[in-house]
Length: 315
Image 1 (cartoon, rainbow, N blue to C red):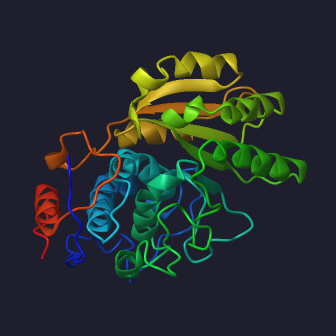
Image 2 (image 1 turned 120 degrees about the vertical axis):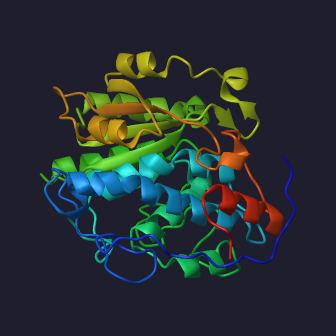
């Protein structure tokens, strides 16, 4: 699929929000998460609202694909439910205090999928969605094409693959040594698991029994050069992670209740947790049919069609 450049980005309506939901631009913000299902959006009612959040995040992502430089589209769309489960339910975070010492940490190791993380941060009140779309990947903007730690809610600048998990292991170990309860969630790509540095980090995490660390692998089956299985097979990830001392399981990466249940389940014993989340590149945008391109620059017509397929007319 080929897309042409487009310098124009139409506005996005903000209808169909409930008073309880924080807006992406202004309005009430999300409460701090408790991680135990007790507060605000962590209630069962909050869980029921999460699919609507996922749809709004996808609308923002396709708008970013229509900015002059486009974005890494397929891998941003594939991880939307993972980010919604973490930011909307599981993690202890507060957009009003993104650097709070007691916060949980989210590290996006597949940093090229910045559009997905920025869109999620906008949905949960960390950044303004209109500013994001206007300034995405522009000269001098903090919203760079690979994630930038200057953006509220971003812990580390990443994108050189194979480094985020090591950062997460070090950060988790630091909290353990200080007797602090902070948790760390690292999102990696499946193609990225071909990097040997990840397996070194896994060994350290297992050896140090870092149960406050959770690895989530976005198993969308694709990478820049083609399907993962034709480049370096990752089919036995659960078994490999188990052999490296992790409590590993596979989950449908687009099933929000299943993701939340897996992430909120108590850690058993002294093994860190890893989820292999089966996903599709381009998921959630019907016109892409689960086969979203690795990178795309949408024309105005592509943007109109994408928003229409999401229930948005693009006006």
